Image (tube, rainbow, N blue to C red; front, side, top):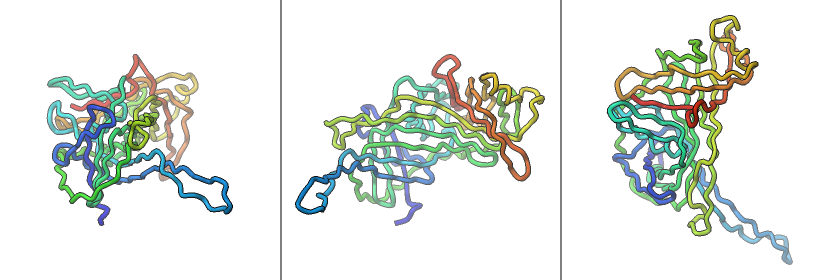
Length: 308
């Protein structure tokens, strides 16, 4: 069996916890660094006896944690959602299609779930009721990535002949030539990490085959880290120490990746509250690590991703 022969496809669920049967033709997602971990709650039976030997454990609730990375890119077609859309929706994001204009992924009011199938060189794992967390990783000169951690219901995997996936043809844009501003200052930025901060919980049910109906996101605490070259406080609009000291919120704006139509990614966070800047070093250059919480401005708007 070959590590590289690992494919993944996903589809949003109509009924949470019920397999939506994704297929490798229209639902395949190009996934990197796929890691699958089955988590079984084993119940020990250490009753007293005439000897000191344990009785065999019994398997209780069983779930699967799936980690993988996906390129952050558009579909290449107006108003057509990218292949990773079901995953983002299952990470507490609302998909809004503005006909003829754009797609927007904002903070959701209602949790959704998706089904994920993972084929590991002929062994297929089918995970229903999936919800999860995500991190957007932006590094200068690199492909922008979505880093997912998904939880789903366990079922016994099956041996299925490897299915050839049909991926979308859109090529991702490298993180360069952006015009990122933070507090209206265009810092010299090395990287930005934006974490959804989702709280993912089980919906336990004695009627479910594995004791879990599905997963859902019940809370969120989005945050981020921006690494940039350090500057003096006197530099216009870059007094990060004062922003921390006064508790002032500032916006991440103009974070636009790409220029080709239907493959332009715009990320905005209107109210970021800074922690104390941390000093760092990169090849003899002093840097700041700026940790921040992404807060509400008008409500359900801590961070948005817009595709145009």
